[in-house]
Every structure is written in structure tokens, then in C-alpha cells.
Image (cartoon, rainbow, N blue to C red; front, side):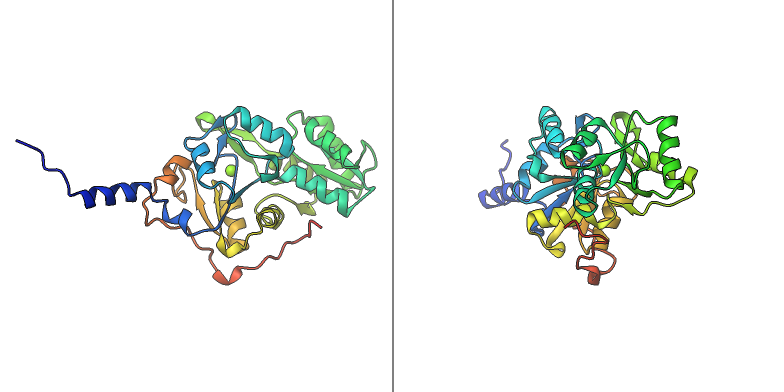
Length: 289
Ligand SMILES: [Mg+2]
């Protein structure tokens, strides 16, 4: 007994269907990708991350609330993980904060709570880093944060220095569902102690990172899809600028668990439209000049 083979036309149709990009990919010109929880988990690439980047080649920029790296240092780290992302495609909250302040507040005295990489970058951009009598207290992720730094930052803010944060995330994901405490936790400690709110938060969901990503791509918000894992930063930030989005993760709002699963989404799968389609148009709270 022989097994009937499908007609050649049907077999070729099936192959074509399998090779076709998912609808969300075909429908958008440009893509803004989150990093932590979307492409990597701490020091592990997520399943399908390299393939996602390959399929979006030339059409994406990564926008991340990362405040411990420069684009150059992060590109080197990602290359070691097998993700080849050129530095010019990495828009990072810490670096963008420094670029913005170097341009908007030249000569200002900065008390910068941050990792060494970002502190070195700030000095190279001409920022004046001080321990006393700052004009601005800038909080980034500092894994050597301690009581003395908290005390110095809070007292400076209480005496009138402007409090600025690279981002307000409370954690980012690590393998095994572990949490890495983030900048927002340090920010809340300083803010709570001084009894003030930050004057400026640069990272997502605020507009500055997304606006810079769109500028680098020459992209229009209504033709750009955001792919992230955090409803409060990626989805909210996308919606504010009139961009559609897809979410990775295991939460109730997630569309799929990994980049691999996202690429295998049903071909009819579509991205979430922002709550108000009329929200399109860029209104960044601050111009990155
Ligand atoms: Mg993320």
C-alpha cells in the first residue's frame, strides 16, 4: 500500500506558507527592540534572538533602559553572546542621559551615581563630576550603591540639586526568573529620603529613547513596531507615540514567550494598536538637541 502524496501545488503552497514572514513583520517598515527580557536575559541570549535580528536586519534599532554600558561596551558584550548588533543601533538610557545633559547643561556640576563605564563616558563628554555641591544629582544603575552614596545624593537633592534618573525600572530579568534590582530602586531611595520626585526620567516609557530610535531609523511612528517585554515601559511608551507593539514574556499581556515563538506566531497574528490611533505624532517632553 502506498501513501498518497499531496499534489505538488499543495506541497509548494505549504512550503511557501512556512517560509512567509509573520504578518506583524510584513506589516511594518521599522522596529524598535527592547533588550533585557526581549533579546537577552542578563548574560544569556533568548531563544531565536539572533534569528529575529537577522530577519529585521537594516530595519531595527535597540532602545534599552540600560544605564551601565555605553553602546560600544554593550556591542562588545552582545557580540560575545552571539548577537552582532553594531553600536550605532544601540540607544541606551544612561548614555542618552549624559549626551542630553552635556548638551543641555554644559558646565553643570553633576553628582553621578553610576557604574564606572558611564562615569568615564560622562567625563569624556565634558561633564563635570563632583562629590559636593552638585547642580544635578543623576541616578543610574550602580551595583556599588551604598549608604554613603544614598546619604550624599539625598542631602544634595534636599539642599536644592535637581534629581534626574536615567530610568525608573525596578528590576530587569535574569535567567531562572530571577530579578536584577534596577535604577528605579536606587532612585526611590534617594527620592524618598529627600522627599522629592525626579525632575526628569530619560528612559522608557518617556519619549526620549523612542524618539532617538525613530530618528536614527528615519522612521515614522505609525509604520514602526515596538517589541518589548514590559507593559509599563515598552507598551505604554509605544502607545504614547502612536506605535504598535508586541510583548514577550509569560504575563497575561504577553504575545509570546521568546523571539523564536514570536517568529513562529500564526501568520494572521497582529500587533496591538495603540489605544488611540490619533495619538501618533511625536511630542517628546524634552528635546535631545
Ligand atoms: Mg525589557
